[in-house]
Image (tube, rainbow, N blue to C red; front, side, top):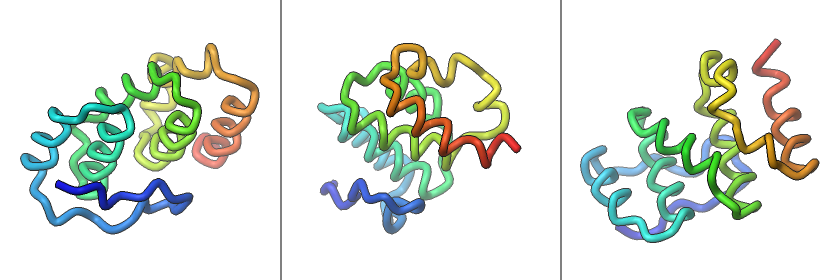
Length: 114
């Protein structure tokens, strides 16, 4: 499976994959970098498979890559439910986040909370 996903600023993150969820999950297991894992997770989300959201939240909470974290936050805001926003364990990354990260998250989530 090639890297056809671009980390654009687009809300929709590119076209949906033509691969089945099982193929994408196999490729997720073979991911060797956080970025590759995130792209496989995005592929699953785009086809409506949210079974790996706990893995996505773990990645978001533990990455040290600021650019990846910013993309994770945009994805989180796109796929989160009200329950996800209420669960403080789902956004532990804010505890040690830089001011810019916290501000970005606040900007992205304010419309969701109202």
